[in-house]
Amino acid sequence: MKKWWIFIIIIVILILGLIVYWQYKHHLDYSLNSKYCERQINLDGKDSCWNSLAIKEKNVEYCNKISSNSWQKKDCYTKLVELTEDLKICDLNISEDFELKCIHTISKAQRNKSVCDMAKTNVSKEYCLSEYNRMEKIYAECGKIQDKSQEENCFFKAQLI
Image (tube, rainbow, N blue to C red; front, top):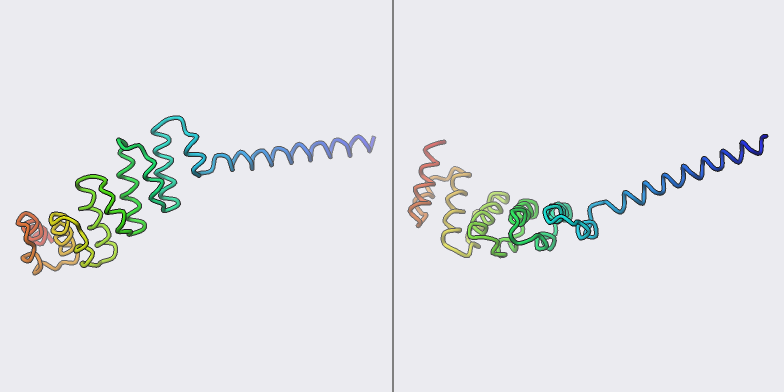
């Protein structure tokens, strides 16, 4: 009789061990990694997966894998700029307004006006300077902005504060 109890206990322990192993293996298969993203069938699910993985790993290459017509592509690059403050991302020509906001985001995060000088277009540079001056409350600098709409924007925001 005692041998049967020992046998049953050993079987129960083996079954519990197999359950724990299966749970562990199952968890590894579905953790967020590139293989998991590649296995996604639904395009929105795949794009969302690449977006999350790019943010988790702080790797722009995963943003590049998001389908070009997805809103998540621009969102991915924007979040990475906020996390990494990497100016190279601003050069990726995501959309017309991306560089404008990208340069400004880095300038704001670093509290560094000279980042605005790295903008490729005058519009981006002027927007960055206007927003930087407003953020730092340097309204005397508003008059130095060449783009009249950005200059007016800078002075207008100065009056609101």
